[in-house]
Image (cartoon, rainbow, N blue to C red):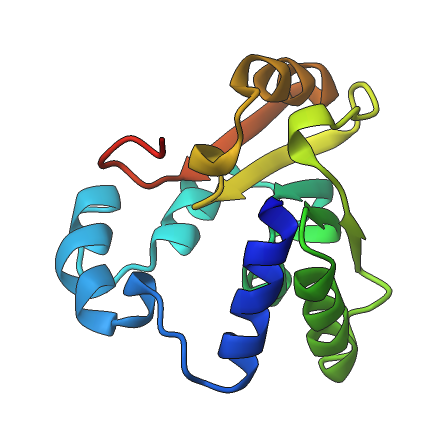
Length: 170
């Protein structure tokens, strides 16, 4: 089961024994920032917000495959949204995300929930922006996920993703 895999990763994150490839600053500075904004000193998320969400904070955002919640806390700190709904298949990831949000006093602004994104049903025309950071390649039912994203975006809303490109996940 996918949630068991991610639940085990949470333990390794909490023990500081797991380091993801995006945790190496030179990857972002050398490869990601210049490709996204043209400037190695401009954080990709700041660039996105400045270009695509000039009237921030938006009322409500959604994060799909949120893991331990780092992205949502960053979005709040960057003034991107008043409220963020975030979901992940891993109960342990959601536990960690809730704990870290509470430590920062953000539990009223970020709502974390265990959800299977492959079968998710989203409310129509609810979100000003939807984001998926390094999660789309884990979803098997992409047509369903994309149709839910399209239906749940408000008119003029945006969908952004930062995604893995590489070998097949099979």
